[in-house]
Image (cartoon, rainbow, N blue to C red; front, side, top):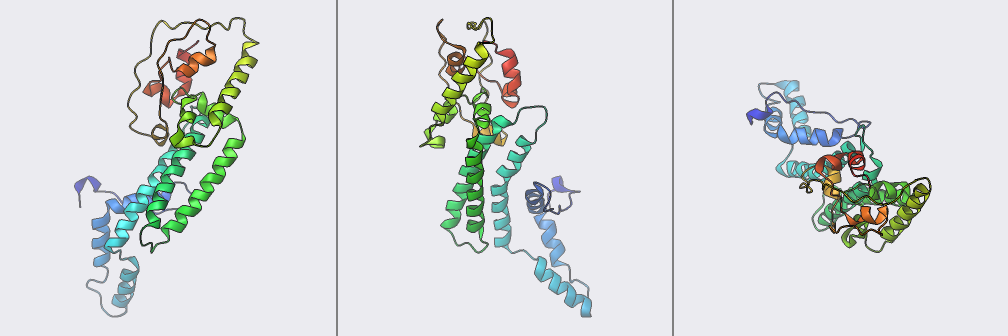
Length: 265
C-alpha cells in the first residue's frame, strides 16, 4: 500500500450525518489493498468452529473487482453532493446566491450518470436510485423558483448577474432572465427613491482579470459571458452592473460582499 495512506483507518458512515457515506467510500478505495489483505487472512491459522465462522465472515466482507469498480463510480457521483454541502455550509458569507447554481449543477450531474446507467447492465439498482434523486432535485428546484429571493441572490452575485440565466444550455425554455431583470429594476426603483444621488460613478480603476475557476462545486456551476463595454452617461446603475464592467476576482467570488464593498457605483 502507498506510504501516503499510512496511518489511515476506515470510516464508518452514519445515516444522520451528512457526507459520511462518500467519506466512507473514498477512504475504503484508498485502503483497498489493506482491506483486501485483511479479508483474505481472516480464516488464516484457524480451525474448527472459529474457521467456519471466519469463512462466513470472509464471504460477507469480500469485495470483487466489479464491486470495487462500482464503489469508485459511486464515489464519483457523490463527490459533487459532498462539495455542494460544503459550499452551502460556509460561515460568514451569503449562501443564498449558491442555491440555484448548485441545484442546476447537481441536476445536470445526476442526469448524466442516470443516462449512463440506463445504457449499461445495472445489477446494483443505480439507475433507480439516480432517477429518484433526480426527481427529488427537480422538486426542490421548483420550490426554490417559487420565491424571488434565490433569484435575486444569484443575480446579485457578480460572477453570475443576468448572463447566467441567459445561458440556453442551462435554462432553456424559461423566462428567468426576463423575470430577474424585472426584479432588479423594481429593487433599483425602490432603493433609488431613498437615495439623494443615484447618478452613476465612472470607475477610475479596474479590477483584476477573472481568475480561472478550479475548485468548489459553486465555481464549476457558474459560467460567465460578460461583455466588457463602458457605461454611457445615461445608463442606470442596473445597466452598469449587468454590463459586466466590474469583473469579479477569485477572492470576491468566494465572498461577493467584498465585491459590493469595493465596486460602488
